[in-house]
Length: 240
Image 1: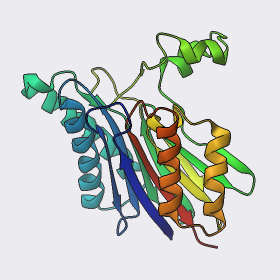
Image 2 (image 1 turned 90 degrees about the horizontal axis):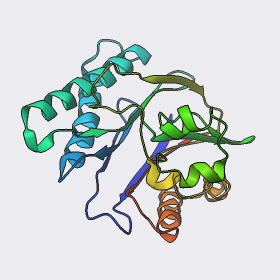
Image 3 (image 1 turned 45 degrees about the horizontal axis):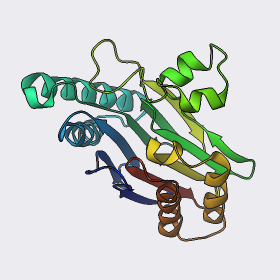
Image 4 (image 1 turned 180 degrees about the vertical axis):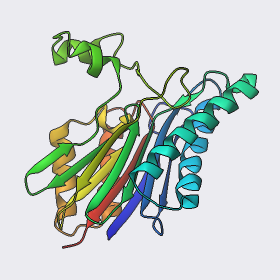
């Protein structure tokens, strides 16, 4: 159903890439994670989480929104277990967002602040809600966007895979029309490139541009803005 391209870049500042993504065309499954933790713990967390989701969905009797939710919960369990069993990995965690094709579009599950957008004839739409201090505390308090962009809590997640305490997974169902695009990305992209610029770069993808070229331009836009973090994108296009 979907044409897909994935791309990841270390960015301009970080010494390693703690993002990880996987495209499983035979399952219609697309997974992206942005890891965190000391040393190489973030890399371990993101890869373990993504691979767990793929393994769990592949093994499921029925591949649907519930199997996707169970896969997210299993990823959390395994990342927690790995952190507890190895002191060098203590405190590791990761964002995690996964999309699974269904008859009309995508089932999406998300933890943290990696995002999913859609672009159709009506413009760019943010599908996922960030589980962050800014989104869940700062905005409800009435802080303006300029203040939030510079607030000391702006990078704080309220939920992550591997965090202690009950896991909250946000779930969504998105119907896709012919010619629409779906963008999954880490905050290395959406944290530095404005929505209007994202839409401008994505738009040629709705008109037949090569997805790899659009992905490359998205990553270059993040790097041109300083590339302070790793940048990972998965771009999908539904045929007419």
